[in-house]
Each structure stands twice: as structure tokens, then as C-alpha cells.
Amino acid sequence: MSANDTIAALATAPGKSGVCVVRVSGLKARVIARQVLGFDPTPRVAHYADFCDGEGNTLDQGIALFFSNPASFTGEDVLELQGHGGTAVQQMLLKRVCELGARIANPGEFSERAFLNNKIDLVQAEAIADLIDASSAQAAQSAMRTLSGEFSAAVNVLVAELTKARVNIEAAIDFSDEDIDIISQTRVVQTLETITGQLDTALAQAQQGALLKEGMQVVIAGKPNAGKSSLLNALSGNDSAIVTAIAGTTRDLLSERIQIDGMPVHITDTAGLRQSDDIVEQEGVRRASEAVRQADKILLVLDASAIQQEQARGLSIDDIPDLLRDDPALLTKTLIVLNKADLLSSPQIGMGDIDLPKALQDTDSGAPLTLPTVTLSAKQAQGIDALTDALKRAIGFSTLVEGAFVARERHLIALRAAAVLVASARSGLEEGQPFELLADDLRLAQNELGLITGEVSSDDLLGEIFSNFCVGK
Image 1 (cartoon, rainbow, N blue to C red):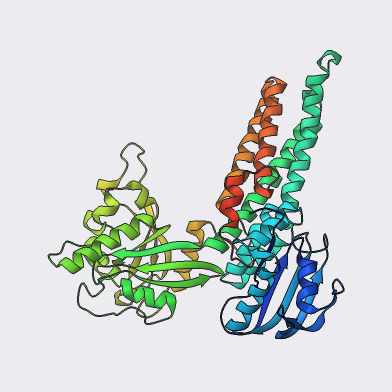
Image 2 (cartoon, rainbow, N blue to C red):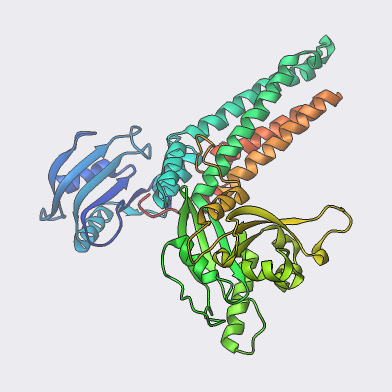
């Protein structure tokens, strides 16, 4: 396979549909157009035409569009044949263009060629897949902002500001005999402060976009009959989980997908965490424990009426499952849900805090350790809004952050690394460190930002990104 190959693929989903689009890109696209249509199409003009086989027989009728390079998505000659969406027609058209010298495209190869021909950068290429995969209007808008270049523009502004700072610092290195004192030049310090603020803003926007794209995994855990299944039903708005008074009704994982202000949330109900002689229930508890370990947030559901009656609204060590007691990292991801508030004499629906049992307190710190709580009634659907607000707060999601653009984990890693390097340069400048060290920090920060847009890239990175695309993109 070569970058000079002419490639072809369905740009629409395979299967029966009203319309299908066969896309062709490469050096032979114009010749293929002439052979299939019987004439040279005018670039950027829609032609209604017959699509013919090698013997002149009509395979289909539809709209043909031709885009001459470089004014096309890929930067190459591109032909689009928009015909009827029957599966047989699709295959006949693909077979015909391949007979004329095209080959079937690899996943993401059209977008990869657009990137390699400087039509889009790497962030925009990824945004194409994110726009297709968007599960909410907010996620789609975030992906569209990235695709239109807002994220790239923010990164390019940061690179330009870093260049300004490097020019001043490296001038002091190159002309050290001229006794240039850059520390007295406040513009360098101001530039680094500006970059820090811009990095903070970009990181906040990227984090919100990442949450809109990925969402979070929430696992409902607790003892049998605490109301876990009722809580799942209340959050999802569906009676998807069976609710009975019999302990151990839930034996397997049951998942629902909801949205909180456009952020996807994957909620999993689990079997009650307890010791059991039942082999099936034991397997359910094992699966529940594994789901808890992998969760972004754990909702530990407790019977509020029992806690109020037995412990004067305090937690006992028995309320905390062994799984959470033995792993402090899991405790930090835990939100206590005090359910069955409808059974309380004076319920206080909403968010709060509750002290951990003394056995789980950190005696060295002296201060009592608490966990956030939400008191609610899943049965009566009271306090559900408080729970969703608590989940947003726990994961750092805020609808107040404007201009969120879709981002991936590699983008966040690069932005954080760049922020650390800029902070290192700022402190080094104030401490009078050698200019060479400051310049190197800024150079490395630029490289980190270059990884985002693809100015600095590796073949392995490109292969991983584009392999996840659908073939027609």
C-alpha cells in the first residue's frame, strides 16, 4: 500500500438505506469519474448521471460530485457517487471503481490523508470521529467546536506566546557578551504569566469536553435491601431493575445510561455485598466487587432509617463493606446515599457530610474524616436532583465553563505537562537559574503542545488514532 494509491469506500453506513455515497480519492479519481460517468465532470458541480459498468450498462443513477485537488477534503482529487442505498448497488459501484484502479480504503484513511496533506490537524481529525460518536447535543457541539479549529487555535496561540518567551531568553544566551539582563525585562515574566493563564483556561475547557465525550462510570453498591435497584430506576426513569423485599434479588450487573446536563453517565446496579452460600450470588458479589474497583464514583447506598435509629445518624464500621475498608483509594471515590428518607420522622433531603467510623479515621491528622452524603428517597423520587448535583461536583463537571471542546486523554496529558514546564521556567527565571535551563523548559513545553495538533508526531500515534475511524472516513 502506498500514499499514491487511489482509495475508495462507502462514506455512508453499509446496509439498506435511501442513499449511499461511494467516495474515491487519489490520482486516478478523475479517470475513474470519466469511465463511470462517460464524461469529464465539472469540479464542484452536481451532475445527475448514469453510473455505468465496463460494457456501458447502467448500474445506478444518481448525483456525481468531483473535487479537484487541492480544494477537497483530502487535498487530492475526490469523486463522490451518490446513488441508491441497496446493498447490491453499493457493492457493484465499489467493485466498478476498484476495477478501474482504486483499492478499498483502510479505516480512517481519508481523514489521515487530509491530515498528511495539511487540510486538517490531528485534533480536527480526531474530532471527526468524536462528532460521529457524540451521544448528546452538548457533546456534538463540543466536537464541532474542535472540528472547526477552536481547540487548535487555542494551542497555536500558546505556541506563539512560548515562542516570544524563547526569543527573549535565547537572545540572552546568544548575546551574553552584550550583558543583556532578561530578568529586568518584565515582559518575559508577563508573557509566562499570560501563558499560564491561557493553559489553565485551555485545560479547563478540555477537561469539560473530555467529560462530555467520555462521561463517568458510576457503580451503586451496598448491602441487600438498601434500595440500590430502586435508586437505579429513579436515576434512569425506567423500571429496568426488579425491586422486591427479598434480599439477594439482584444477582448480576445491570447497567443504564443517562445524561446529566449532556454528560453521559453509565450507572451500574450490583448485587448486595454480603457473604452467601449461594454459588450464583457469590458470583454476583464477585462481579459487583470488580465493578466497584473500576468505577469513577461509588454510590454506597445505606438505609437512612436504620442509621438514624441505631447510631444517631452516625456510621458504624459494619456499614462500610470490607472492600471499601481495605482500600482507602476506593473510599475517596465513595458518595454515601442515605436512602429511604421517606421512613424518617423529619427527613432532611439533600447534600451533606457524615463522619467516618473511628476505626477508619486517620489518627495522625487529628481532624475527623468525612464522606459526602445525599439523603433521598428513591421510592418517592425525592432528592434525585441533589444526587445528580453531587455527582457533577464530585467529577468536576460544570456547565459554567464556556467553550468546552472535545478532548482526549492524550490532550489532557500534554496540556498538564506543558503547564508544569512553564511553571518550572517561571520559577527558574525568578531564582536566577541558567538561561539554558529556562529555554529547554520552554522548548519541551512547545513539543508537548505540538503533540496535540500533530506538529510533533510519531507513526505509532497516527496509526493508533486513525485505526479507530470507520472506513469511509
